Length: 637
Image (cartoon, rainbow, N blue to C red; front, side, top):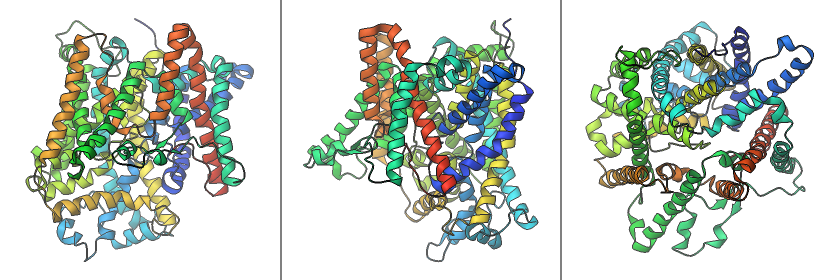
């Protein structure tokens, strides 16, 4: 039996000590300054923190070797920081906190929210106390007075219990599929390469000349652009926006501006793109331009007059369902082997898995029953609750996890493709009903954009543990334990900040209100303008699903077929990255063609340096913005 590096007590202690500091940093970023370190993967603030610790650790190795951290301890810190930080993100608990209070504060006689849906909002998940609402939105009030604290305690407890159950189900699914995706298919997981090198190959990586060349390119761009904000006379690099509007002014050529009207070259995206499989990069680019061709054809044929055509979001829904179906079908033998092992019939063993297969299967079943029962307790119909969570896993959780493992796409927005969108399109609002639609809005926070979705991070943690020969079982347990600690801490630190500053005082950005606003405006629209099933949407979902299945079938039979179905699935979100990925694809093709695998391996540090330089300088400008209390340069978005 192989020996694995155990999770040490000081790793746990360091993680707990770092947690409130990282949360405070990201309250400034995500809630107050809108610099968004968690809109991408990996979280650049976590990579920066890992780098600082790794550099400090080099000194420890030289002068106090017995106190130095091992590579396994460093990578464990990275995993635990990422797993806990995702809650303090623009796509997780910030929207949740807003949804808890928004409906009652902004309900007016004009919008008639009281009559439309107030009665459907559970009092154990929302807060309607006027004094609490005033404190939250106007500020200058201490949260930790007993009355305010007790009002927040009940919804915080139940939302944390629900979120833990949901995350536990995700982790159980990852345990079952891990062996197939990680060890048998050997998916590349490009997102984990940079933290792996920082943790396990710190000295060699930081002594690489090519890495520093890449680092320097990204750092100089960020430094010059940052100085331009303070000293406008310094010319900036136009890498974040080279407009194309002037090139395409006549119809139907204006269609080429849809889904991106500028050339944007993020150095970190060029760096991460170089690590992606070349056929996937080229497939993403191919489908991105085919996506624009759809608008071109729509203008030529007059189909543009059909509202929503060519239904990109609905095509994306179908594509993601197809990705989920293909991924699970390809994993069916592993699922069956795991099931037989779980119940004593298989010949394989699960001793080296993150948890026992029996625990994983029972966790999926019991966790699924709990999250459905949670919704039913508030009045959601069982059949709708089941469909809702199946849709979440089929259109968001599993497809995003597969995309991150296989492509390493750094950002994945699921706007308008979650269950609140797909089920309304397929079933119509009348059949779903007002009470169930209210729950769609309550669940909007984890079905919104999902750029920090937990499930891909979990599987990447298992990949890092496997690659670093780390005790994955101990890491899996610790991920769940720290989740229990992190969730209430996150909510109370957020609410304490809003009680102090006031969401409507002008000291907090207006985006906080937009979270709850979007959720309840969707609901208001559904209730005041009932919708029947949308045949156009259903057709587009079917097309998206069919294209994905067809491309997968062709690839399984023709080994030379270069077009990958995952490219179709992510092409709708490529508008920020197509130029950077085109550079990555050209560079990777040239290196492999003229230098082979040997030159490729020597070139990888250069491109990792591009990502690291962007992340380090981005973190520097981010911290400087907090210190100076003024906007500074943001390298992304």
